[in-house]
Image (cartoon, rainbow, N blue to C red; front, side, top):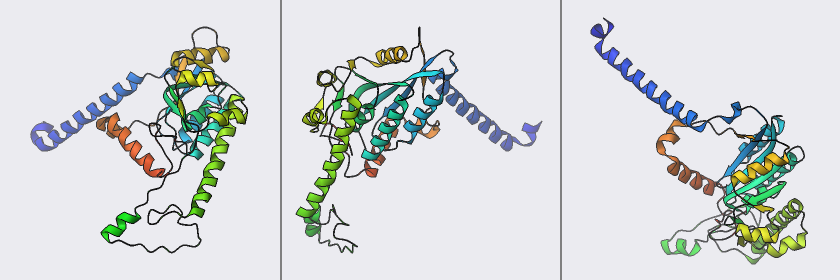
Length: 302
């Protein structure tokens, strides 16, 4: 009866209902496909994942804190697939891993790449494991700046800079860097590099002199890094989980619980992971312009 009296309204309601069912179905398939190991019983190994450029340490820090407080989680695997990132964020995660090792065993599992900042965060773990071909190392710091002065001259563009101090516009693309500015920045980079060396030496229980001999930004395969003492063993993710369970005193097959992911974005699901990943890389690069170097070109911590 309602459909006959209000055919347009009925059609709109029907379309809305169909759309709602489709959205709910897609979301349900997404979440059910992931599975929620948090509902599994028994002693657990928690897995915290670090993927991509290290820019925002908050999610990883919160995940580590949750696992520390969860009595069912006996050990943690820090799964790293990262070329590095900002100095500050890497140091924040490093310190949080150190806090966690005082209460629970942490095994760093390196995937395709764990270089520079990616290695930095794993250096605080009780045990570091990587694949033989994992790209790792790249212990170093880099800053880079563009100089467009000659280009601006050709197109007839000039700039006026008003600054409160001699060094306030250091690194400006509008002019050449002065020798004093270069010395100042080299001192800054050298100081941060020393912090990196100290952190690796402390985490790996190596002398700073030994670390410094290989802390020139070069990358290593997992096999090479193992021989140099930067890793404890070679193995994949499953090996890391098994080792973490053993170190945590878990008998038998452990349950594996992954840290809670960010909230599901239907728009991101529609756009696809590749586009989302590309956007993430673009925005991350913008946030750290002049401080990030991808490992295929050199070091990338800071």
